[in-house]
Length: 276
Image (cartoon, rainbow, N blue to C red; front, top):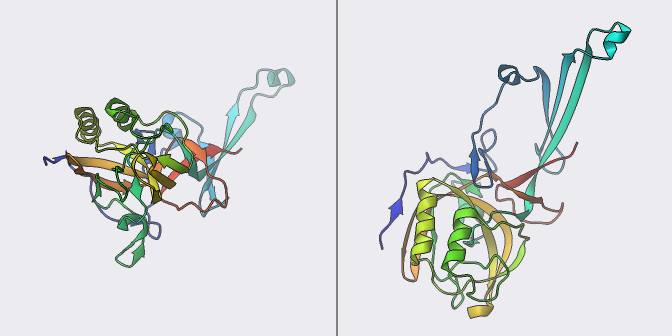
């Protein structure tokens, strides 16, 4: 087995109990640098105010209001030289119910950095280097690969899987049951090339997280209960065995918000929607 890796970003555990002031935003598979922008330095509205509030979860809502003076074209006919223009926008960050641009690699919720304890802190824990196995996942013929398009059995060939690893699946995917893509396909050159490209770009992918794997062979089904971001820094594959390395990370991703009270685990993957 020949491992391939890229320099991993600085590690350091992050958990729900002790996060820094917000995650770096990774929308789809485009990284958006974290940072506060002073609007007045960008030639935009200076008279803004930002309010953080709560809609469903603590600090999940942001409201931005802005005021600016503008010359009124018609107002001048009434002797008014300028008017105050006001604008307001509200956005809410929700857990992802239906996700887009998902990669076809399934992750077990029992991974210690998703549901375990680290130094006395309950996970999920982020920015902690780890490996995910690429191999048999508890059912005959199941090797941690999903048929994201709903196909039955191993119909999704190497080119299809490689495209999903490179670009993600370009439709919204709901939580629920997904057929296994049977067979160990990680040794295929198409999939290795796709993994190598994502490693070279230090890419973050969105993986489905499952709790139960039912049946076996072409009938094996993963029960997907959530989504998690994973920054890929290396991989190694040979025949029926292999691994990918990197770390779980909080992400803002393309998708549809989950239903309040859905009970899905909070694994740090969110989507943002405008509410006002």
